[in-house]
Image (cartoon, rainbow, N blue to C red; front, side):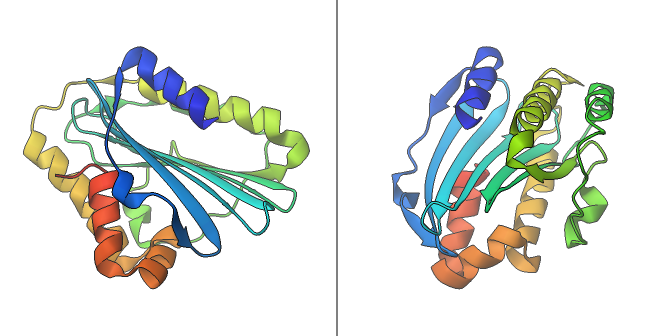
Length: 214
């Protein structure tokens, strides 16, 4: 799905690959990570993490969009294949400085109510997580249906009615507040990185490669 997603983003917001060689081949939590980052013209920063571990029994794909040219919410996609289960998590965070119409995402979510909901638990960032987010868990046989939901949701996000960012500093501060919150208050993958790679390296990884905060 990651390759498909990058192709979809590139059609609307041409991608330029960035140098993140300093963050390749990272190992944490029994997983090995490969990382890519891009500048998406007219959109912002896009990053990808591909991870494998546990003798190939677990695979995780992550794609994050930090929009700083168009006023969309921050986008985080995780897909986890582990021991016969297929988990889809798409979280949208309110980093908006102006109104954005996300009605299409609500409509897309309604098309897939047949897929079982996953309990995301409680986290410090729940107050800024938007209701258009997704949390689903299914079996391997449901992969095509989960793929369709993920693809339609991303398309809906990329085509949402949003204005060009009017206050770049305010947009950056909202994004940075979320990322620093992850580093200071924790998150599922953040805690693993901090424990095994150290706080300073994890901070550089998040700010530079994953979220493109200068």
